[in-house]
Image (cartoon, rainbow, N blue to C red; front, side):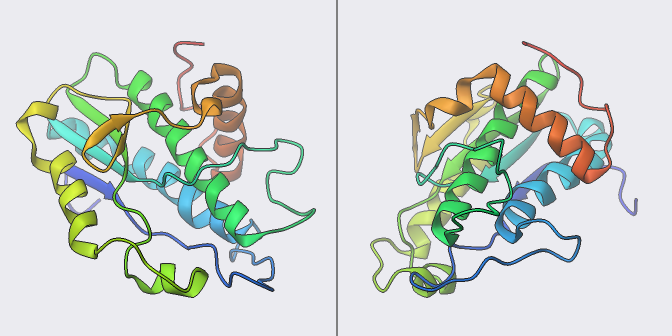
Length: 204
């Protein structure tokens, strides 16, 4: 690792729902459903790899860029091999990221590292949105304001394990609060990313 300390990690990279009509199922280089891999598995692995640097920098913050669009995970078809829909794949990946937010907040309980997930704005004028939906509702500046609030607000120094809809705390999809579902996702994610059993079980 080039740098031993890291004050903040913002997991923002993502793949949208793709073409609204006729989108085909895509795979990552390692053979996983693309949206699940990029939007969820990649930040899951990266965050764990960077935890030592974040611990060296306490107090530090982890921010996941989520979405108000969330769909329940089907653990019998996690990679959407049946009845694929790009928008549904996107929504499931964002719920998985929220579930990871809650698990990681539990893991880091007692440390000065906060973990939160934010829906920055609805249908911002970005290439990802325009590819999926032919209209926009919000500006990129609105989304930036939401992320910067989580990144810099002193009122959030001790707030962790929360979902934000722009500037307000909100409730995520009900499955996010199901400890059994989160444990199943965690175990699968450890296997898929090669992390093994490093994610301690807490709060189950």
